Image: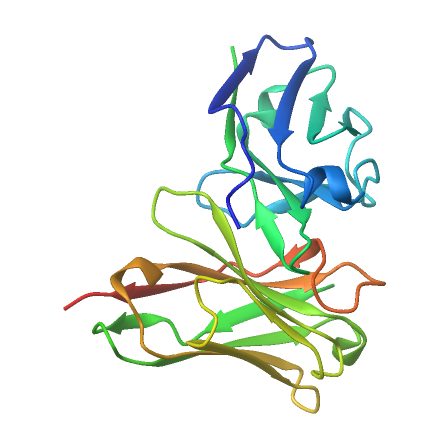
Length: 110
Length: 122
């Protein structure tokens, strides 16, 4: 199972909105509404931000939102804040009944 | 408060074995599927394995299938990963993670441990 494709880096100024794409195939992203997004600060464990494409766990700010169209899922961060600077990973359920992560995106707040 | 504490990492030679443990607390362990996810130094996340709450259903990434075995002891609230025939490319921080409620085995992970480092080198 190949990793899902994400841009290596995305940047934005405080208060702006940014989007991170996550491209897969019909065997993962396009085939199931089981896409998740994780935030990881340096030296820390990942944190779940979005699951099942659009659902936010309790405690995650509503500035974070998810969507999907075909084989591409997206994470949007609105009102970008300095603490949002981190690595972000998408993941998806696959037709092999396993999970696959994306390549990861470094978000920089300018 | 959910807590996951991994142990058992260390330095091992290629071809060797290691068993990781993850002690869980703060939730009804037997109700939830659990996962192992790894991250090689400076690299991205890689899903490794998952197990159902009862332990009856397990899943593995192709990269570890036949070499790694996931298991759990619900009486001890502990998750395990037995790693055999280790390779240099298995070097990584291994995270134990709780799966979101409602998933049988594979699923998104809502709580993570701090990880344990496994180094495979001669």
